[in-house]
Amino acid sequence: MDDRRFPNLKYPTRRISYDVTRPYKEQVPPYRRSHSLAELQAEREREKLAAQAEGRPVTSSRATERRSTLSSLVFSSLAALDQTGNAVIPPYVKKKHKRQVIGLPDTPVALTEINLEDLIPRYAPPIKPTGTLKIQLLWSQEKTTLTVIIIEAQGLIIPGVPKDVEVNPYVKAFLVPGRAFKYRTKTLRNTRDPLFLEKFVIKDLPVGGGEENEDGALEFQVYSSHHVSRRHLVGVASIRLIDVDKLTSGQVELLVTPQTVYRMHQGDLRISGCYQPVAGKIVFNILEARNLPRVSILGAINPYVKVEMYVNGIREGKNKCKVRQNTQDPVWHHQVVFEVNRENPKLLGHVFVFHVLHKDMMTGVHKIGQVDLGWYSHGEQLEHWYEIMEHPHRSTDNWHPIIKTGKITS
Image (cartoon, rainbow, N blue to C red; front, side):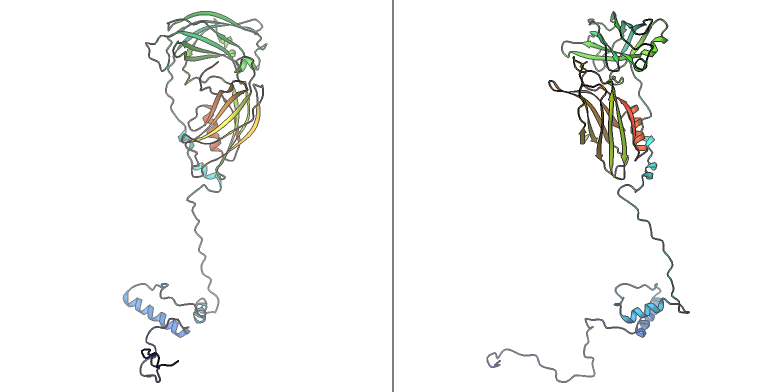
C-alpha cells in the first residue's frame, strides 16, 4: 500500500528495545497462573498472621480463593492425612429433616393432632313447643287393627307469624315409615284450642307386633288454613306403635314441635364415606334407601340421588346416580369422588348435600328430602361425619333419616 496516498495515516511506533530496569507489564494479567505448594503455604501464613494482628477470626471468602490447580489439589489431599499417613475421615453430620410447609404429611397419623371434638356443638337451645295434641289409641285383640281418636289440641301457635293472626287448624295423620295410611280431619275456624273428636281405623297391621310395628309410628301434622297464603305448618307430633301398650287408658297428650326441630320421616338413606387426605379426595358410596314415601296417587316412585359439594356456600361439584323405576327400597351402589383442598385437612366450610328426588315423566322432578354431611350437620349426620374425619382411609357407612326441607305437598 502506498503511504503517499494517505499522508494523515499514522502507524504506532514499534518497540525495538526493552527497558530492563522496570517490569514489562505493570497491570495484573487477565489470567491466573498456577501456584506452587510453597507459595500457597506462604500466602496462608500471611493471611493467618494478619488476622491475628487485627484480632479477627481467620475466614476464607470466595473472593480470595484461587482456582483449583494441581498444586492446590495436592496440598488439600496432604492436609487430609495425619502424621501416620492415614486418611482423616470427617465426622458424620446428620442431615436435617426437611419440614413440609404446604400440604399434609405422607402418613395420616398427623390427623390425630386435630382436636375434632372442639368442632362439635356442645349446647343446644331449648325447644319451645307450638301446642299440645290429645289423642286416644286402642288396639284390637289380635293387634291387627288400631283405632285412633283425635280428641283436641290446645295452645296452638304458628311459628314466625304474629299472634293476632287467626288460626284455622286441622290435623293430618300418617303411618310411617312409607306413609301407607293417611287421614285428614275437618278444618275448624278461628280457634287456638280446637275440639276435633274424630275417629279413624288402621287395618291390616302385622300380627303380633312384627318388625314393621317396632319401627312404625303415627305422625300427626297440625296445619292452619288461610285464604291468602294457603296454609302454615303449626308443628308435628308422633308416637311409636310399640309405646301404645304402655298407655294406661289409651289417652296420651303429645307435644307439637315446629318443623325446624322435628324432622319429617321421609325414609332412610344409607351412605358410605371415606376421606383420603393424602390423595386430596373424599369418596362417597350411595348404597341404598328404604321406606321412601309415595309421591303420586298411583303410588309409583322413581327415586334417584343427586350429590352436591358446597365450599363456603359455593357449589364446587355435583354428581347423580341412575333412576330406579317403581320402588320404595332402591339399591344403587353408586360411587362419587370429590377432590378437596389438601391445605384444609379439617374440611372446614365443606358441606355435602344428598338430595333424594323422584322423577316423573309427566310432572317432572319432585324432591323427597335430603341428607347433609358436614360440621354444620346435626344428630346422626354429625356423628357419621365425625367418624369419617376421625378415621381417614377407612370406609364407614350409616343409615340417615331423609329430612324434608321444601314445601310440604303430602
